[in-house]
Length: 219
Image (cartoon, rainbow, N blue to C red; front, side, top):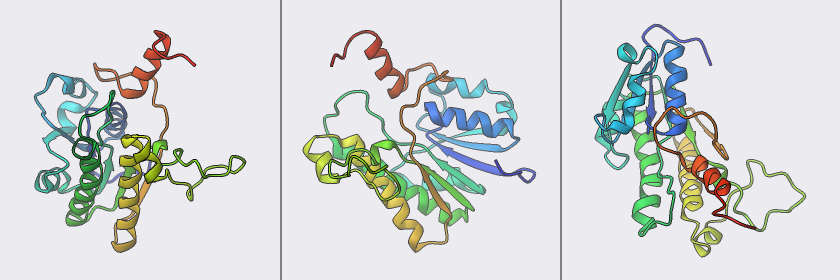
C-alpha cells in the first residue's frame, strides 16, 4: 500500500461486511482515517468495527444507502481514495432480483462513482467478483479466463443467477465510467472469501462452506 500523507482519508463502502471489515482494519493499521458506510451505524452487527485498533480515533461510520447519492457524497467528501465493496450478496433465492440485487449493484456503483467525481477522489477500487467472469459457457475450455472474459448476461438470466448478473453489470458500469471520466478506477475479482471473521455473522462464502461440511450439498 502506498505511503500516505498525514490525515489522509479513505472511504470503504459496506464497511461492516467480511471483505470490507478487513480492508478497514488494514487501513486503520496503516494510519489512515477511515470513513465507513453502513446502513445503520448503531446496529449491533457493526459493533466489531468499533473494537478495531485505532477505531476510536480514526474510524467514522456514516449512515448511507447505495441508492441515495447525497448520503454517499457525505461519506466520501474529503477522501482521496475509495474502496467500493458494498453490494448485495444473497445467501438464498431472492423474491425480486431486479430490486434486491441488480438495482443496488448497478445504480449503487454509478452513485459511488458520481460521489467520487464530486469529491475529486484520486483512486477508486471497485470490488467485483469471479461471478462476473466464470459464467460464460462459450469461453474455450483450454483458454485461461482473463480480462476479456465476462459472464454472459443472457446465460445468467436464463439460469436465474442474478448475483452473477449483478456483479457483471456493476463491473461493466465501473469500467465504462472510467472511459468517460478522469477517475482512476481499478476492479478486482475475488472468488471464495474464507478465513477468520471480524464480524459476528457468516459471510456468503463461509456459509457455503458450512453447508458443504454439514452435508447439505451432494454431487
